[in-house]
Length: 405
Ligand code: PLP
Image (cartoon, rainbow, N blue to C red; front, side, top):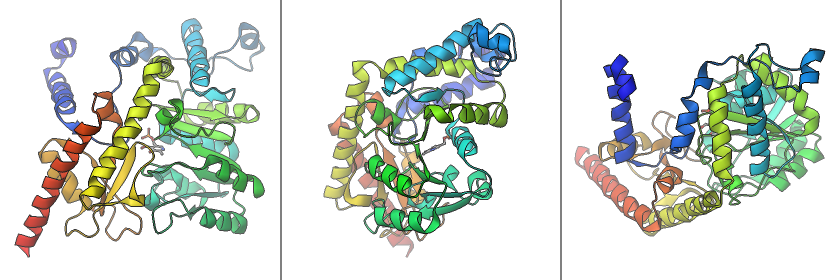
């Protein structure tokens, strides 16, 4: 900060304020986390201005002209990128090909689709309203505009409806079946998905952005061995830098690599790749397993406390790092609660609930996650206290709505 302040006091001030906000607030956004000083330092290193379009190649491949970089001076970033790929294969105990260049989860998905689909091909995925992500076929996103996307749903209790998936897969014969979510609190049955995809000769893709840290820590079943393509972000439960990655079966490696570069992106962010490599090393340590376990234990205790207080938790609980509070029976919206909690130093986000009646800008629910505060050392009893603080704010909003009436 001192260095930034010398050049730009305004930018330094804003970073400092955001740092303090993150430090002093209870952060419950399910897609966020705090990364280590080592990851931060790697991301702020001299690698940020190194151009390295292309992929690392052995000297012999470089000379053949088919593989390699479009710039000189890449000796060290070549080594780094290969090391990063090796570390991630170790984290997930896999021999899948890995591409660590995607700048974000959305760009990983963009490239993954390009690797196996043509525009107009059919995708069967989970709707945004039911917990899926914007890039899983939303009408306002490239995915909904480029592809013919159909959705399987969650059942009336909020669980992925495997019968609906099977029925639609048989009717539509999609080229790709996709699973993964931004707001789904239950274990996803990857073997069952893979079987259905195989039965209709579809590619099976998993976007494990949210749960990747739990997969790495052994707290969620792994998609490796089941999915043909796996995308992820590195900044959620994995606690790494902001970025994306794609894993795939070896036979798709060339298609995935060329979909990332030169199709979707230019030069890779080698500083972020350095951060991803540090993050992988951290994820390989025994402490990370303990962390992932505590995230889940905390989440269960947190959700159970809300249930005890009479709240409607979607699906009646959680198996992972997230749950949804359904506030449909209150007069106020998810946005009202998000804003009111902001005022008392609790950060979370509004979220649609299954069978949502309000607009996506209002919503009838909020999404609650335990990954960031677990990084800061919160245990079950801390989350239970936060549940009661949230309940006080809910009661206050109820009283305000009653008074308005
Ligand atoms: N996939 C899922 C399941 C997500 O939840 C997200 C982001 O929240 C993304 C992809 C996109 O990641 P990014 O914001 O890095 O583009």
